[in-house]
Image 1 (cartoon, one colour):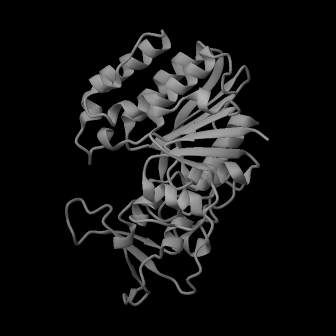
Image 2 (tube, helix red, strand yellow):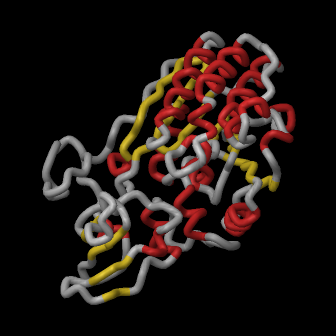
Length: 322
């Protein structure tokens, strides 16, 4: 059974995906709340900073997986990562040339965390115990992260890996939610490709049974949840600055992107009457987690919003290990 070491492991999206495929996992996560959820779910977890560990601590791991934090690269964040992007890309190249790189020189210390997976990959190579496969993912809105993955690809190809990068739509892998993720999959000495979609892309106004008959229909919220009557979710998305123009998705559509603010989303019935808001279990199911996933600790909506969607993680592992 292949072993996976997962960096920035969060509440278990990639771990749940890997375990469902028979891959043993161990995750490193610094946030105590996410650690509590992982441990309650039975996922082996080390409560630590990934910078304080390396491949030598996990000699049996053959697959590296990671979803580094992205706060400094987002528009909502302070922008330190965006401003340092040229330096980040230069650091990737220098690391590939085995030059010393001090991530602290990139400003906000979180900016340099995106370099951690590459440090692990290169250290494993140099120790003669390379990872056989690599899976990396992050939010698509951070276009700079895709630039970093492309820079990674150039470095690891020179080390004998085949690599594929791109932006994937999660509803095309069976998630009842529209969300895009920037991903990288790599295999050492063997061809690799991004996972082929299994479901149709969501298009507003097109019934989920419409579209390419070679693909499965996308999954609506109502099919994923246990609510017996139709409902509409009202979020802050798509307002264009106008609070009266809030984003709306019906239960016959996939959810909009699940974030840490999902507990604020209003839910109304066909007559416009208020209904109970999403429970933690329901929000987790929209990310592909089992209904009984034992969400623990504080700030559970943030944990859910930050998690890698489980069906996408499963598709990425399958692509990297096929």
